[in-house]
Image 1: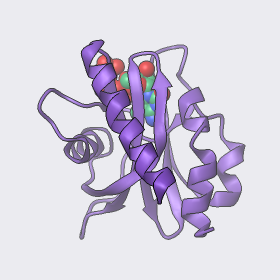
Image 2: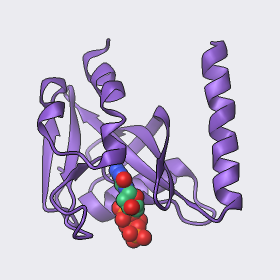
Image 3: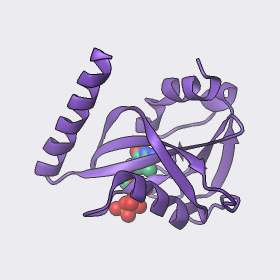
Image 4: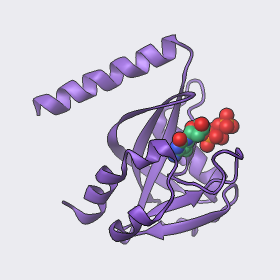
Length: 151
Ligand code: 523
């Protein structure tokens, strides 16, 4: 409980420092369905192309993180999702910090499509280690495993 409170405080602080420094907050979506998470293969930039990520992107000015998650999933995957809470801690990335949000498909949502990625794949806990993840996302694999297995 105390650890969670401290982590939450640290999260708010990191976000403020990032905002002051003009850095971006990027959201990533852990979209889970039937015990699998949706992984997306990046098509750009060349140095990240071919690697897998949790889909997402930069939070726009005045936008909440859950709204950014929903917008990015509409833009990149053509599907509606509902963000339902954070996963893991803030992860440092070149543009600022990456914050992972758990999400579920909205009722009646369309099957995700790779509108901006090279490929999509629903991945079970036992397959997470098989993918070549972008560096920041690799740091959340333990939390993802826990999320998918309930352990
Ligand atoms: N990451 C990252 N992991 C991850 C995402 C969604 C993004 O490490 N799951 C990094 C990759 C880029 C930066 O965050 O360095 C921005 O992600 P991007 O390119 O997907 O977001 P956009 O498209 O909103 O930002 P622009 O590239 O500025 O258009």
